[in-house]
Length: 254
Ligand SMILES: Nc1nc2c(c(=O)[nH]1)N[C@H]1C(S)=C(S)[C@@H](COP(=O)(O)O)O[C@H]1N2
Ligand SMILES: [Mo]
Image: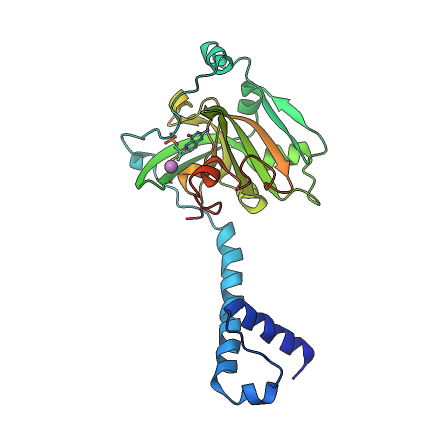
């Protein structure tokens, strides 16, 4: 048995948690477990492949006529800071989206700047972990475009952080996604919902749509986007407000 093959088997065994030791290759080969390990290792490779492929797949899109008559607003429906109230009052003319972190060219955009960039519209289903769903139409700027414009440092950046204007007590809402989600064609910074400017309760003026993930990842009231290497040192270290405070899973893929 070649060293490479032994290494693979050992890795497979470790992954499977079988505790099989592969010192006596011949003995193990003649008994059941090793073929189980080999079979499962193939299964593992297949699953890993499927995982990679699935991560690029599109979320289902719907016809405009399939939109939900009522789209519930959840979590923060309003932002009580004086700064936000001022911005809302004059139609977000003073709003600035900051894009920074591990990028070569940090920059700021007004809402008008964002609306002048190429946009994507998608009719998708939102699934909240609390057990409700709704279909809505979203228009916004592909996140990939913003990251490309900023010159993402692909050598160091691993995640994208979204900073939000709303607080739960003293804790600002925030979320993080990885770069596969960030570059996904349906991952957009939405400023329009169902043909109207994004209403306050749904995260005005700008919210994330990350269609392969559960509702709590879709940060509303976004004020800043940062490319980061790691989220362990941010807030509670779990990568998002609900991940920190309610132990929701960081990975919320659906
Ligand atoms: N900034 C911010 N983003 C947020 C939340 C929030 O409370 N604050 N709630 C999350 C949850 S749990 C859900 S289900 C969706 C709800 O989006 P909607 O209000 O447009 O339905 O926003 C998510 N993004
Ligand atoms: Mo949610």
